[in-house]
Length: 255
Length: 231
Image 1 (spheres, chains in turn green, purple):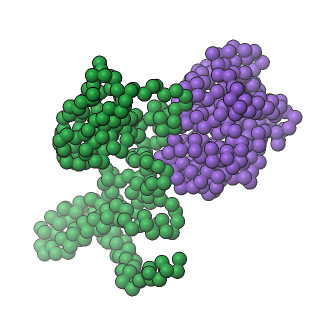
Image 2 (cartoon, rainbow over the protein chains, first blue to last red):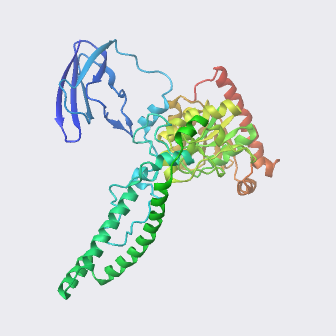
Image 3 (cartoon, rainbow over the protein chains, first blue to last red):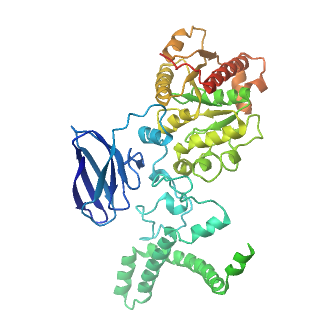
């Protein structure tokens, strides 16, 4: 009979689960997590052998306990999992490995996530202070280049196709680069407004120094001109957004 | 039937062999070298798209050239998005439609090389008479054995006049020697199989003999009577 011992650690955003499965006979076991979703240990970007979305399937011997660890974003629950014996230990697999087993064993040859450029990120006025994209938040996913390696449950999930309908869907969530640009614009406006309210020479010098010198103020003015042009476009879009209405019900009846 | 053409290291002429074998076998050449694609490319969906689930394998096959090709993309983002484990299903889909497939596998020992071997019913290992290439060929033979894909032939590119018995013994498969020749280089530059550029050349004859031998092995593999590869 398989028995379970466990230890839980609250790591803030996730709960870390350590379990030890012991048995007085050699047996196959199925561990089902009470914390969902399960974040299994990964090997070469894939769940390690034996792990699935519910937990783990494997075997334990009478001599050696089975030690497992995983994480979950769920709050700690006691017990974190249940274990059930599934019968005799299955024989070693004969024959060819599956493609997924090969990838797990040999590792992927593709470039790491950070090596993939983000070609569609719009300019945020990066040469002006505080306006650059935070590098730790940018990722290939932000550009619509889907990354299977984060979660590969199948070739269809999370993919973007360059069709009008799919682009419409993808655009429903604005890429972070747009938010970064808006943040940078607000910072430029704050700085410009501070510069516009100075009344004494000392205040002017302090405000210019705060921006980074008179050259930085000149660059700021250039950026504000570009911002005005972009915002003119946005104003036109804003009017159209107010005016437009898709006759969805009628289209659904017709298609 | 699917043949995987592979090598232990790059630069030994693997893609040239794959392309010419595809021409001889009237097969679709699948450029499975995801990071270092070398077969002719074309606009439209490619293997990166197929392995990312953005296109079907059959719709990505280009039939216009001298050899039907499923090309591979050249972008880092494409490699990143491609799931190497999906290659086997993609190759099977092409095989169902076109019957004969030659997979140009990536060199090396990573999973993309392993999955490309897994996709074939038999493999051809390409090498050159240099120490690094021969060591790579031995490692690839071991990978093929671990994956369970029999080795049909070894192709020794830029071969000299020496005997190749030791190489055949070490790798456990007969050796086809392809000497260095100007007509091969000319065919490569023209994007043609060598039989189209120099039909009577030694290289052309060797590829014809190789294709015939490989075809026999693949037929035996399909009927389940293939002996295990190598000692």
